[in-house]
Length: 458
Image (cartoon, rainbow, N blue to C red):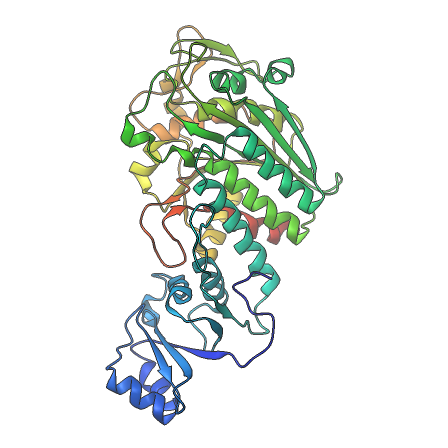
């Protein structure tokens, strides 16, 4: 069970969720001393407002916490994620139902997250006793997956290079009894992964392709591919300092597929899972790959380098080609791929691309239910002309227009055998803290994807 959830023991302190409509009724049901205190404090049931209520003996007897009115309940179902930072140590329970009890409990767990690897931080000490109607094991595996992704992304690049990312994937595989393998350095050329090798070869930290497999081989094959660029200087087309500042998060795609993999394996879904992570550092040195270099990819497609800062799609191309060779039921790739996606949809809303209308509809439905936002974007075929090269089959960049779409169209060329494919251009970062979402590394789309796979293969 996640440490934010109480296992047993004690009498939990009640948390009363109130809105402008419900507050009068809740107030009238409070013990006299608590009611008088709330009146004296002039508590107003505004969203996010809280009040600790004393009992007749001075001990904490309850908590009031304001929510949006019912007609605005969709605004932020994660608002209860503020509670762990507001409450003193102890065990609590929901005395009445918030707008969505399951998401409120999950928000409580996600709001208790702290990144403590380099700076000591006291645990909040507030725990939630779950009602019998809420599956604590299910919420725990989701919260654990989110914490895994956040921890990996928040770890700076000096301690999270390709080898350390491999260690994290290996530890996850060992935890769930999954098979594990990796190809490192020159082995990538020997096994025909030239694009992964080209992007990572300038770094003293050897590039690699990480592979995890789990589940019954007879079950439907689902493959997750995550971009693992552990730091991105931009290569010879070097980024300005402002754009390089949080490039430790450029392995956010890898972190998020590992989060989803944890949820899938812990739930023991009836599928055969494969995780592929091309892990590199895009560095600058004498042997760095150059603009207008041309490489033959694993798929046999020749690629001209229009910009060395479009390296993520290159390493994904070789990994997607490998994934596609066994013609799985579904390939999903996640990557912190383009700034254009942020310009179009901002940091919270992840664009995704797929040809499969049924898959898109299911993803959108689960994204809404899980409050794990995403938005379908078009694989607009006429824009393929923007990727044309005079010297190779394709250029890795498409000019100054439609950057997220052309990146997706580039990747689409490397998936021809899978029954379905979806590409997520995520940000993997919360720039400003929100309830249940502290600033820093973030888990995006993994919860919605897991919910979809659980529905299909649970």
